[in-house]
Length: 231
Image (cartoon, rainbow, N blue to C red; front, side, top):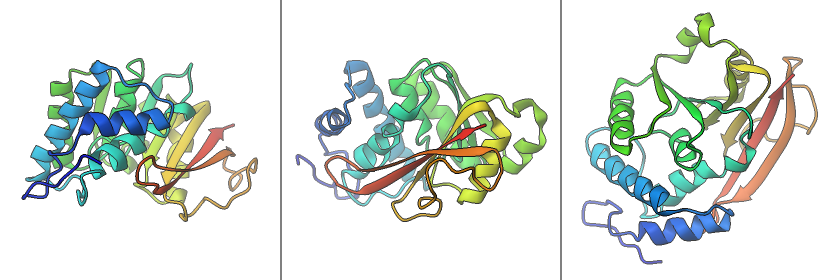
């Protein structure tokens, strides 16, 4: 793999384009010049801000392109095609919402993040990427749930290992419209992964529709997405 770490531990010497094309291709995703350019700018901003604000751990040159960008894109085939209003809960450095938005510009994306420093990063990143249709909600989830204006207003709620499953299920119930999807991106052995397909979760009105097990391209790291539907 044409990658090497810089003396500061950054992954700027990595062939980002080659890695993304190979990994995305393994997922059946085609990246055009527009997407590659946006991901390159995303990585540059992430590396720059990461020196000041702790956004993500970068231990390998593959971490940003595969562990974060490509991992986010594994949820792409699970997103509803008709419903376009998506809430990324606990978005952090923008994962998985912003990589999904880069590939699906039609998505009406909302990023919910409580950290002021991470929100500052997200605002600057979105400005530089020039992505329309992205709303940042700077608030704690519990506080937002007390405000009725976002109740049952999203077609899809997604979160990438930011909350424990009971909390995330409650968020899905609150924010999802009837028929909406909750996508929980988890590690292979995390809670909620051993439930039976088709069961009603704790009689809460969420139907366990699918558990997708897979390995990330190039690295082979195991991942799991648990998909629920609000009934």
